[in-house]
Length: 136
Length: 300
Image (cartoon, each protein chain N blue to C red):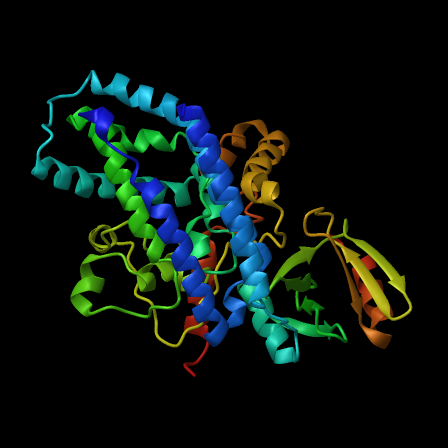
């Protein structure tokens, strides 16, 4: 076999192996159904995302899949699930906001981060208003 | 002589796969959230892609090394002590490369995908770069060539170094006996390296021997009981493979495009997170803010 054929075979073997391992991880049920269950947990997540972010106002999605938080400086932090962890972004006045009764959809302007729809109940309108008045 | 050298990584791959399977089985019993199938798929695809990049650019890098070998100050023979010396020195230059890869954004852009998983398991070890060639990372091994080690020998010991670093990407092992932890890079030391906890940022750059960090002031011990958070300061929030590979390069391009002229190059060579208007955080500013808070808050 020529070296090129050997390399192609090795590549094919690697692709087969990674597909098998990803399938195996799914088959074993690995991962996690993480949820935000309390304000205390939300605070800890906020501090993990932005060191020193100390929320004075917190709204957690009814299913716990995400949250909106505001600190004393008026900064708004959007948190959402990412696999078995959480990821977040500070929002600015370019952030997209759409209110539909109890559901608030927030877009960060970052395509790969995506939009997040949170069920905030009656608080949705209050947070939508806050986001629309962000200065920076 | 050089033509007979084999690639150790090729022989190690089946063991990598076997160990990942064993770790998955261990994780299922103990903490299923330590693996995430989509994250695993991204990590492994990054690993496969890096071997393709290696095949594409490896020849050029080896040719540059052979060119440099023509300017060597002496010729190191192919004897047993030369292999040991080459391995130890290569590990030192790996430390230098790795430290630079965290402190210079241009190098970080190639290295970041190794860190962008929020998980820390054996599949994370395989998150290797596709763009190392463009970050000129191979230049860090040139001093060995100029000293007089043959490029094939350097390539071989570099592969052994890479294989060593595979097994330390795990939470399945806590700590080894003190003498081992003192000399060698271990899962505990490398967990610190992958952590985003402020106290751990930009620490423990070692490949095989942790002594380089101890000697050069970048060592931090893993603190028992403190939960480690993995990943990068601004978590990706996506499993998109191509974004994982190129996001920092895109960030550099955007920043250079929009920055005032006198600051443009700084966005390539200064530390990740640097900005001319101080609107962003570097690992140093994050650590300092954390330290300030520690001194302000009474001990719990």
